Length: 597
Image (cartoon, rainbow, N blue to C red; front, top):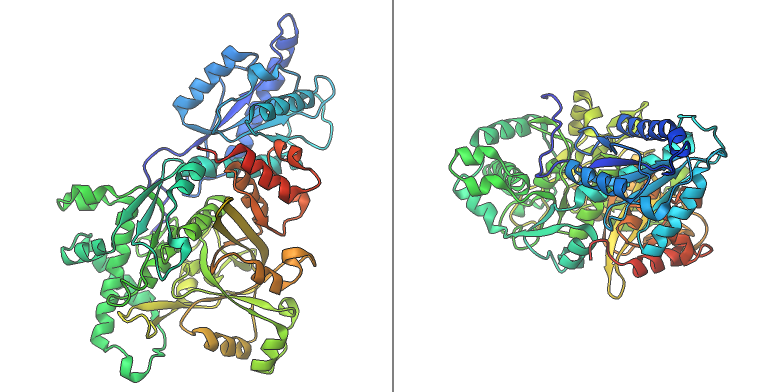
């Protein structure tokens, strides 16, 4: 395995965080006495964020501090211009004192913004914080409030833990918003098997995400394969790596429909070529320009994509499972690298949910069908066994019709426990364990063109967050999520349940955290309230981060099991109904409208 690859494979520089130190502009002793503590506060904030954040591609997060403290509109304008030139995508205003809000706030309507008001008594920044937030809310410019619980002394440059947590939560979500802006979603084909999530709603992408849409017919794969528009040296390298590392599983098809050994060998060559071509379509490849294909070398600057596959492609050609599984994993024949976000069946809504999870966690994402709720009674009936432990009240079978990231095996570890890690923390040994835990089974009979499907079972005990964006007529995009854990079932139970669906597909047994109320009354209720046949699964309990990101993009959250103390939204949301947070979220998003409209 080669060294880890950290780079920006898309067009456009990575967004930076702008730090705005605002100050009481009155001269004659007031401003002068505050210059040092205010600028120190900004520098400590920048230092903390740079030390604790990376972009999802592994590059460091840069912070830009205003040249001077901001005591009035002239300095605010000067700072805004500097931030524009520096590529700032999110701003944090810091102050230990009272300042003049209307003259000093950030008024960019599309820039995620927060204000950290120092909790002190000498020159209380909290007073400015409250007044500035009121100004933001009155102008329809939502801002996040960061205010420590404990009073600090003026000049104390330390950042309390509760403030640190909010700074990181806000900054990571804000960077995600800025990273999306101007990138593309690439549809490789159109609608698969009548699945509504495959319909590309350009209004959603443009108005809510600031993205553009690109489209390529699947015949482009045929053209590039027939005319050899791919790096042939890399193809030979990739095929050799595949033959060495991808273990072939059982062919469960009847003997009469099994493909010959020659056909299976050809399928391997085809699916490897498809993987190279899909990647090149997304992000380009300078090698193609050397071959005389300058147009193809550019790519579509796609931060996410989806492959239709069924049925127009899979009735004749090998399926896209290998392509999707390898690209969404954190490694391939070139080494360890950032996973690509590529959705099965061109489900673009799931692709964006995967992208949200990736930008927030820096790790790979599992694409899965929300296939079956297994009650304890049903499991006992078909297996004769009782569910125990975390699975005692039932499980949700997340199983995809073919691919899922190989990171989803759970063969990476954090503190000795199964995990899915940012690619820069993954070791060569962990890569090999992920590969060894995966079988590649010849595709089942309804994939008439052949191909291979990934088969693994996710290790139990991983904290996970299942999420999904749905489009609802009359509302627009709506996010739903459920935090919970992966579980392992006894082998004899797993085998019986898995055989009833498809033994050649990857399985994650998921148990959501239940609350006894509403959509989280029990495990069945979570399944019963899920709004689509698909979901994206992130490692970790990141529901609070998803809620923060959704608020920035004005996407309401229809169901979640995140405790109220972890929910972090702009201060304006409470004005829409502090005692009804779900309704307030819908009302705030409706009143403010999409971020880019």
